[in-house]
Image 1: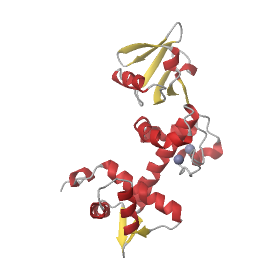
Image 2: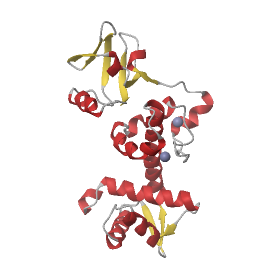
Image 3: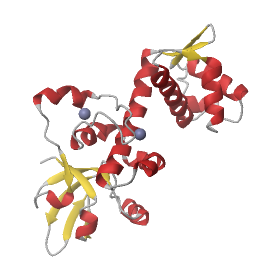
Image 4: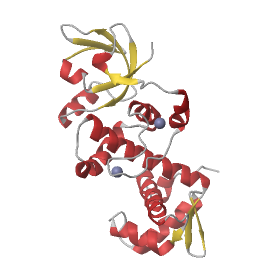
Length: 236
Ligand SMILES: [Zn+2]
Ligand SMILES: [Zn+2]
């Protein structure tokens, strides 16, 4: 027996995410833990996620098969696994918005669209580091609650922000890139072609006269402006 992934049935992981997000938003708005099938269908059609309600219905049926939601008497509800996935999507999106607002001073009206773009720089693995870096913010720039992660539960023990700009790292230290906040999008592409992407481990050789980092076999010189846009977590 093969393990069926969403993509095998003609829907992408993104569509799964969008549907679970839509269900989460309805629940948040109404304060009720399940909603009418028709309501979620019309919402996803209204947002242009799918062409029509028929398609929306067939995706809902697939989400039942994948074990993300239950459908009973025309009501849609999360399974525990679906709720966990939905929570994580919302958490990443709203933390990304917060990150844009705090680090890049992007206004709340722009953060919603930009947050979609920045999602690929905020991988699930680094979400808790970003949350800690931002001081476990309770809400996004639009005032919507950010679901808690494991890092927030440890808050009682006071977690120091573990993420810092590369410019604050001491020479000779090794760190992992958590996220990159470029003021210029082309720069992000250039960095990624050089292998400077979130998750990469780097060693900081020197800070003067230029920043020199080593990543694997590659040694790179960066100017201070770029170094200040690369946020890292020190490893050793
Ligand atoms: Zn928001
Ligand atoms: Zn947290």
